[in-house]
Image (cartoon, rainbow, N blue to C red):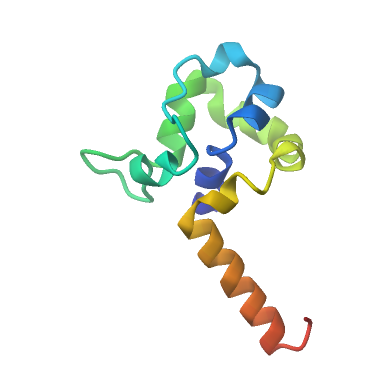
Amino acid sequence: MLMTESWMLADRKALESVVGKELLTDYPYTRPAAVEGRVAMRRSKEKLTPKQVWTNLMGDDANEILHDRSELLAQRTDLRVPAQLPSYREWCDGVEHALRTLGFL
C-alpha cells in the first residue's frame, strides 16, 4: 500500500482534478521520477514517507481526503505517469511474470 500511495503522488494532474489546485500549492515534484528521489517507505533525513508528504500537501485532513477520494484518484491517474517510475515498472513486470507463470497470460 505504501508504494501505491507513493505512485499516486507522481500524477499531479490527477491530484489537482481530485483535490483541487489550492491544496497542492506546495507540490514538491518537478517530474514524476522526482517522487522516488524524495519519498521512502521509512523516513530519513532526506526523504519522507508518502503519508508525511500527503500531510504536508493537504494538512491534517489528508488521510480523510484521500480515503474519500482514492477511488476517483485511481480512475483519473494516467498510468503512463507512474510508468516513468522504476519501482512501478518493476512491479508491473513482476505481476506480468507471475500471471504468465500461472497461465493467465
